Image (cartoon, rainbow over all chains, first blue to last red; front, side, top):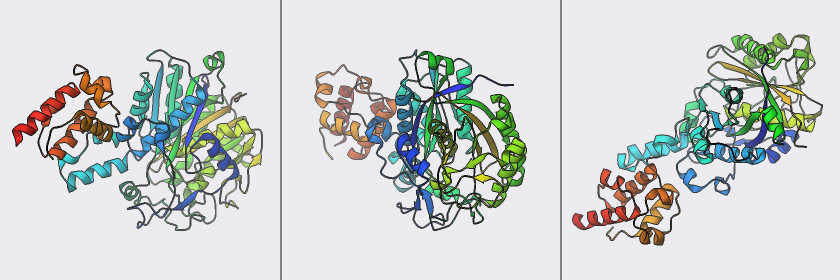
Length: 408
Length: 85
């Protein structure tokens, strides 16, 4: 049963390889490597040594200080990315309750929270600032984007794993179908701070490699887990007909979404969950498997998980699975948890706009039976992209994105 | 630190604790203007009061947080500083 596609009219990105959509896309298309050794204060002596870091990011360039003092770095990213997306969409003045916000979050505001808790135990309760009550909460980014923009329409936060990044987009699309005029959706994360890093050390899927060039190699015979990343992306969604009627550029269309759960630490089982999510997403999009022109893979870089993903693609796409190009641009920047799949959606839209499939940086020979795009970008005319995401806690999501009419 | 607590200090605190830029002169000549007019919300006022308590070593508490305007807060804080000595 297919549903009306929802337009993507704005894209904003803050990522390790670029603080704007244009810079991000250039680096993504080139496939340059942006993983590096972590040298931040308090972070350097941990087993986790390599990540994708957003360097030299100055949120004051676009976000008022009032919002910066009361928020964590993960919200700074979201505010800056939302600004870009809204500027791209150029929404007209809209009624008070017409615009909503939906984000997903995994790490929350760990750096802010750690600072205030250190004040609590080191100096006393009087030294804990009042913004601790809001800044480290995973809902902070939805709240602050909503407050700053005056967006009083349907707002939501999804806390369901990395895959939540895709689910937030799908949730926003459903809000549009229910009558919201525009939705600001996406996710950004800031997990590279001492407390947040300690929280990740228990993940057996985490890469502990010290060499940035070897740390995150999905689908490679030397795959040894994933490198985490900071950053993410925000999108503006609108009813497609309404967007065209106001003369907005429809950059892409959210056509279908599927979501399943297969439990923690059962990567073999994720094969069936991810395949089911893909089938649901294709059905909602009214798309046949043969219509998928490119797959943006979850690409965990854990052999068992990579194998399960390859089988899921084969299960869901049938014979077409052998012919479809698969890519994982995130191997160049790391996995930004909930922000990761939203970056992939941005890449999918840009890939369709530019007629090119970006490569999987650092991987030169896939050890699995898929057509992995490696080495350099590949010329293509993709019209339908499938974006996949799995969370470490067992959520699987698939999102089908169709090509829009572009920016003209 | 001793008083008196000035509008200029209040403006600095609002900037440092809540990221709000307010003109001290305007706060002084408009005693009826509430914090909201200068962009400071209730959480921001708590942040300012918390910093004041540390600076003057005085518990100012909920009475300070209940002040509606810069003029009320300056008057209240100065009264506390004076009576505290």
